[in-house]
Length: 93
Image: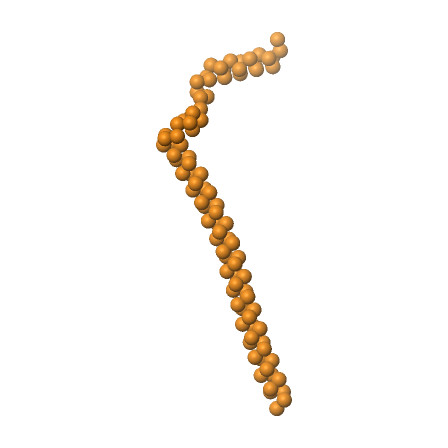
């Protein structure tokens, strides 16, 4: 027998000997009223909520900056028109 087969056989034997420790937890068995399951569900909901809140905050800040830029552009446009009107009146005199 080759050395590789011996090592693989020993590894398989060790896995079979300690198979009881590889059983699934209560989540895998479907015990839905266990505290571990409830904690996992709450953590998933929390992560989803944080993700959507961060996304909503980013979108809201873009819209606020866009509205502020439009307002400033309108203010500069009206002040430029007033300046041009005053300048034309001063040149005619």
